[in-house]
Image (cartoon, rainbow, N blue to C red):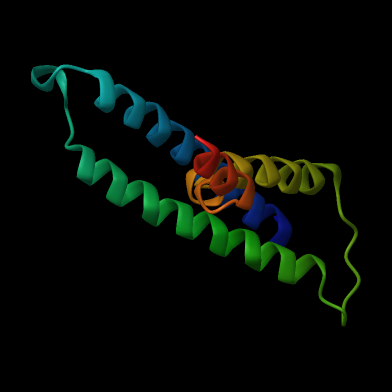
Length: 112
């Protein structure tokens, strides 16, 4: 197993954990209190930590792949991993902050 395979295996495990935590987050938001098996703050604590680890390992993978001193062939699985990372970034972004500060949104609020 080479370095790239190790990074991709860790990233795959972190992606699965992030998806599971998203599902748990949705469940905890809508489940009655007596059916909750975890506190929402605990789930959000772990979701933030795992997201930071995911970003860190993506950064290491990018540094490894695009190191100017060594040439690495980028395999299809690596391209797929980076492709999925792009969608995860878009899904995790807090768009409400961006939209609230948008000049268009401010202009429309003044018009009302």
